[in-house]
Image 1 (spheres, rainbow, N blue to C red):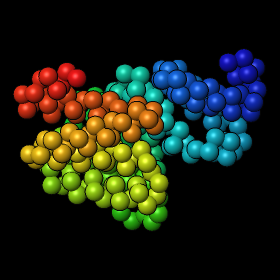
Image 2 (image 1 turned 90 degrees about the vertical axis):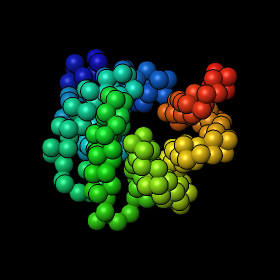
Image 3 (image 1 turned 180 degrees about the horizontal axis):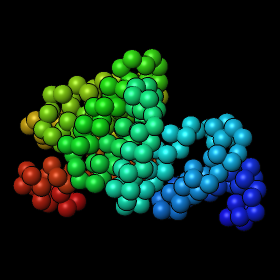
Image 4 (image 1 turned 180 degrees about the vertical axis):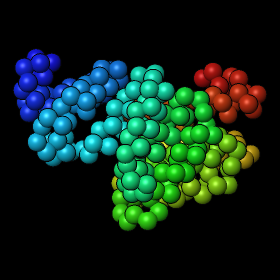
Amino acid sequence: HHLVAAGEYMAAFPTVMSAAGYARGVYAFAEARRQLSVAREVLWNRVDNPEEISGLSYHDLLCREAEMARWAGQPSAAAELLRSGIATAPPAGLDRARLEHELGEALWAAGDPAASLASYERSEAALEMVPGDPSLRARVLAALAKGLTVTGQYERAREAAERAIALADESGATRDGLQARITLATVIARQGDLETGAAQLRQCLSEALAADAFEAVVRCFGNLTYLYSTAGRLGDALE
């Protein structure tokens, strides 16, 4: 903050980005969002080659700030931020796909699964004419599968999850593959094979805990609780 106040923007920028990364790593999401906001609003246009220094594009930075806002319990603020980015992004391509994907995540957290699914579908469409980046495709497909599952479209969800898993395996996108496997296990359970689906979810949970994959851990516990509760197995749900 002293560097920013003193106008030492080139020195402040990497310091602020490092502080945001540290805060994110210790789950201090509100602080991470605050630091990223300073980087975006105050410093981005005042330093030379911010993309090179940060390793992020402007839209990547905006997505990361929105993610931290979402995890800080501010999904509506995250959605507003992302919509401002979408308004200036091309209608197709990687930036648009990332922004739409993150908007889907924010709308999901805000409790609007239909709008979330629509955003995931726009994200997938934005990638249709763009070659490369299989890890982003895996992430988008994993999110799409999640949205389709919640809206009861199990066959489409299974197909999207399986495609996401294959792409994640090819690209080394382990966490995105894990998210797709959580969805696939949930679909299996919802289509009648509770034991297999639950066993796969427990395996995913073990891997998520080992990898410190916060979001995946939350999903595994939530999905297991939901599946057991709807099956009338409250004892298992409480484990």
